[in-house]
Length: 262
Image (cartoon, rainbow, N blue to C red; front, side, top):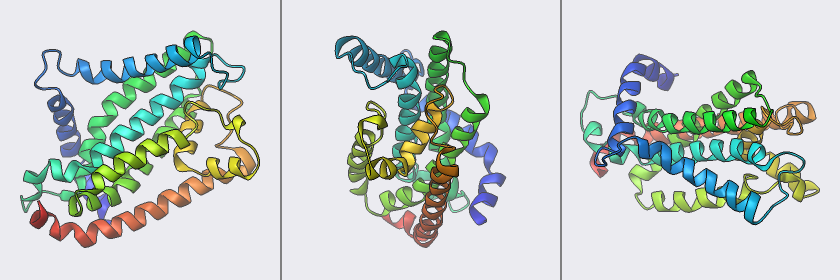
């Protein structure tokens, strides 16, 4: 497809600009990129302290809370940061859009690359924490879920980046939607808390697949990838393919108008 050809031809440019984007986020601070890693790390640790030691929640079942919680939260924080930043990327890089020779299609990928630095760091912290408690990761599982996450982010931001550029107010609506998605995704609460058809509905949710799928690399009781003869895996990829096809169509139709609205 045209998008993948453009991405492949400009992959080095996207990576280089992604690195610059990550550095520029914290360019005006004395500690620089250290804040990019410190803020989400403190955020995750605060959740662990509050829910494990203060509220003493039992949502982790028979597993240590930190082993159950950190993989899910690290995956969510990567997804949330990548989707929100990539969705606003075309407006943030308006000066590139107005350059006729610049490949506009790769701009959301620049933001995705930038977000990946923090995402990989958080996933590393989750992996090391689980290993410290004796839960060693399934490396193939981790690689597969990371591939799924990147594919889903690209698919959904083809649509959201185009819509945010044409309709600026959508950026605020997207923030609200992502907040709702966080609470409807079993990051803090456990799927065992619900019953019946609701379980099937929640497991068919793409964010649930990614969060629970990453947990499956550490916790044997999480089986969403292989459950019901790979039912939820099939659903995830069908949703992702549909989102990409729809988003790609919207992006291509509106791409010519981006420079006019910026």
